[in-house]
Length: 222
Image (cartoon, rainbow, N blue to C red; front, side, top):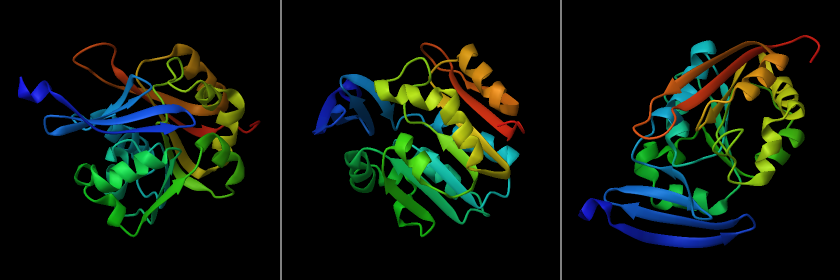
């Protein structure tokens, strides 16, 4: 029963509402406005977000991760020998601080890796401001296209954002999205922009399977 006891580490007010870091046994959980957001007890789908897209781009040098989470995706990207830079775009300063102070062991101390580049920014704004080209873009800033914790994140799953992301890829680059549930409508949107779209799922003990969409080869008319 001790393992299920929740200890609140810190609460923080942000422009998007309240964030809470809590510990349950040996693991940590992050809560956003009362809604579960992420935890350290199982990172299989967060790792899949990166490993699946790098199957298409095995020699990726520049990787973008949208959403730091608890650091699982960042750690997975740094395992790639060819990686020269892993740029993480995270809107919440507190999540960056918690990863540095409380969660570092779960990302294998990724903040100390010289290839790690943490950018404190809103991904939805950053994609229109950045002029770089990337071999892999891996996005996990919410629970998915049909279950957003932050209403403004709906924009990420719309056609104009998908087209912009396609333009940010290198010629053989690939894009991945994490979602807490499958959306046929979102897959159709991706297929309007990309020639190749596939979906991988991660079974969950409760509820729907987690889902990762992988898209590559933007269509010429994009």
